[in-house]
Image (tube, rainbow, N blue to C red):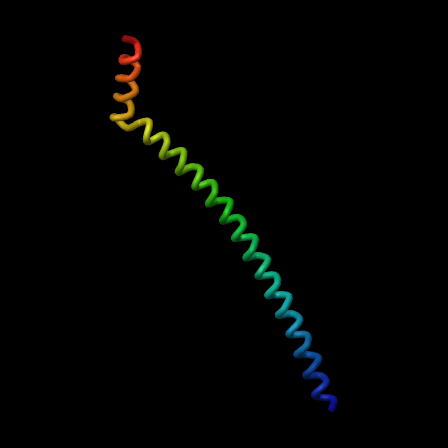
Length: 74
């Protein structure tokens, strides 16, 4: 009877520790996903700004804007 009680106590301690480890890992995973989401937002902003800058630097856009400036002055 004594041996089974020791085994039950040890198993209970192990289950408790494993539960704590799993909760800690879930917390770390949630924190990492939150950081990843913030980085993805920043990357999206950068790519949007880069796309706008690239659009302005295209030759057709530059010449079109210059032509429209001269066209309006007439």
